[in-house]
Length: 251
Ligand SMILES: NC(=O)c1ccc[n+]([C@@H]2O[C@H](COP(=O)([O-])OP(=O)(O)OC[C@H]3O[C@@H](n4cnc5c(N)ncnc54)[C@H](O)[C@@H]3O)[C@@H](O)[C@H]2O)c1
Image (tube, rainbow, N blue to C red; front, side, top):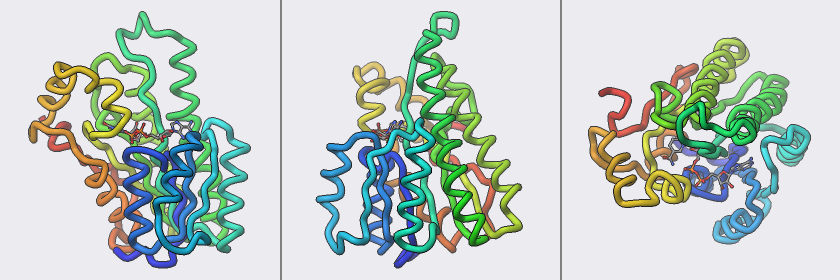
């Protein structure tokens, strides 16, 4: 699974799953574009990665801004002459509670990131990969992209849509040698879940109990799966949605 010399574009790289993916890809020898809207954490991550600075590009980008996404993908692909791999991790939890009480502006803000943002990333990554007829993309969906998740209708809808984008792009680009897969993580111990569902001991216990393995996953466990799917080790895998969820979706 050596990514030596591969060019890898990672969104949501400043925290949680994206950070673990970025660190793992860096350790595997990839040339990285690290993209996030959090400038401070992104700079701290880049500084903590050892080695040749030419191998790590950082861009402060809000993925809901298509122009900014396109410019960052173009800049990275032009620097290295190609885009080999993209791992799309950026996402937010958004509004929770019953749908009838969900604020419509909060719903739209969630969709702007988790769905429109994913669309923007895929569109411009595929534009480069399509031109060279090779590439591999991994989208971080969610177990909530496969089954219903209580009190998070907007998030669940967006993640189901990410699964739909993944499967359709897998079909549309298969003959051009571009693979597109998704990961459906269960509850993963990251700042996102610590600030929301796991903010109270009861919340943490509730989410842990939803997993047959009775624990949260780690960001590294998602990075392991993402690097496998992105790499040539998964050369016959496309359109798959890999549950990495401690058995959650097997109940
Ligand atoms: N943590 C979980 O339990 C869990 C479970 C299933 C799926 N996921 C998904 O995994 C992905 C990563 O989540 P995480 O838990 O690592 O969260 P996190 O909050 O730790 O990291 C998310 C990163 O994405 C960035 N980001 C958010 N919106 C952005 C935007 N508009 N443009 C650019 N960057 C943006 C944030 O700044 C942050 O650095 C998300 O898509 C999330 O939905 C998480």
